[in-house]
Image 1: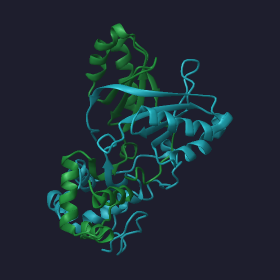
Image 2 (image 1 turned 90 degrees about the vertical axis):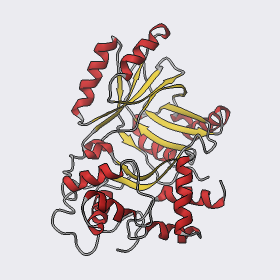
Image 3 (image 1 turned 45 degrees about the vertical axis):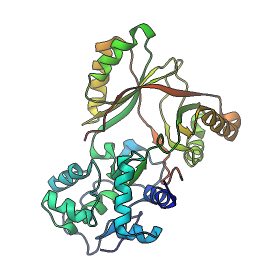
Length: 198
Length: 147
């Protein structure tokens, strides 16, 4: 199999019946502003589930990681690679890659910035904010008036709080008069941290 | 951390190929060997410069529920409410934040319907309102944090 990165192309030869069953269950848009609640749940079979369980802690650090996974799930490496491609295509897997630890990489100040922008502008501003290199996540979330007016959330990273606040100012300048109000919430304590279970 | 480590972190935030020898493919792109890449990844994971390396699963597309929730808890009640909230295994992480909305946690459930059930159970256990703030739209860009 050829080494393909990102925008995975359909596997060749054409997948055997069942392999690409995720496709057609629903279509997956690669539009970054795709809303999340419009999809039905794809059907995963036993092999998909085994692969997910075998790799939820990470991919094996051996020269042939997909072969290693294949041994664990009792399938062939070709099958495992086809399933990975299919799950990438339909978005069950966002991507395969590394998640840097902001904190140990020197980004010691992480602030959750929250913004009240006009609803009709949230897509426009969300895209622009999400593209900033110091923002790791940007989401639209519901308001709860009157006590919570903010509809756009962006995690802002900097080496300390001062730098975070400077970057928040950059966002505020970008939004101009559409920044009707904003705040930055810094975490003061981790109360609980566990991995996500599936 | 040297130039090669930085190149690895930047490269692997974009993606990792699905093929017979994926580490070799990436190693060639950044000008090192497969063996060196693997050993650097081991070290960076061990030293927590990387929190994770592997497939990123999309909880909602796996049929599960995921939501960010917030609560407003008076200081004097904060400790016992924290214990109550944390006792739910569906609470994946929980952070104290310096705001009137001073408790923020992520709920991860096996089904979407279960989110609302757990919210009600937390409200019943604590007597405080839980503000459910699921993402309505995500603005996601692949590469972040060039180091």
